[in-house]
Image (cartoon, rainbow, N blue to C red; front, top):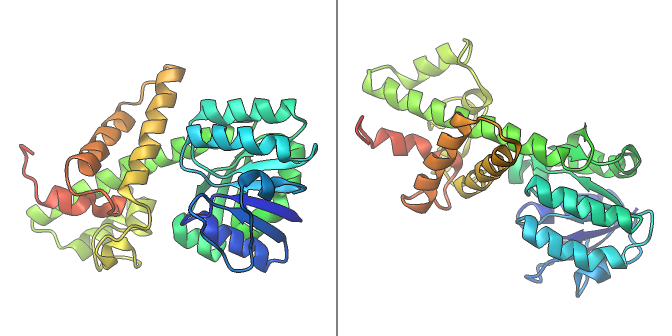
Length: 291
């Protein structure tokens, strides 16, 4: 396919590179001017979109998505697909979908799970909202960039699935870090705790795949000084999106709300900015009951 790719950051660059390696003709654009091996460079977003079968976007937030869509939709041919892989608010995803539909263009909101490692390895999971027709068009690209793509329903449902998933992830990581900190203070060996919990009712992905305790379980960012695989800043963004959506939907999410407030304190008032979201463990280790 002929593909335009807008947003060549930590996630977008390896995704675009994988598409080019698979034989697709990829033209990319990023405001920083970054270049990606195998990807032709456009001077502007609309230039990357011209004549493309699919335009992929990987952008920081909903406001930027709306602005980019306003520029690139007029440059896209009718029948093409705008595949947005950003994590944004549901309202922005649905607003851009309406604009795309009016222009005769398919829109898929397809946020991803798997982090930079998954983007590089081509093992991302895509949570996709939009039409069946647009989903079928993009299916070959999902196969290159990831190992699973789930069609979650109409426009906006991809974002809904992502923020619900990451609300669970934020809550379970905090609980896992709290439990390790408590185990330490009770004199329970970390390996023993892992061996018990990883095969008991308390097990979760946060423990068994992404353990926040260094040297325990599979290798994770905790073994690399908490250099981010998934930054605490991004977890805070996703938790805030979950609470915006909960407010709009009149949904009671007390654990999600508390997780958002804890990550807000960690990132904005403590030392969490630029660290992995599992670095909550040393935060809890250093605190007593009174905080």
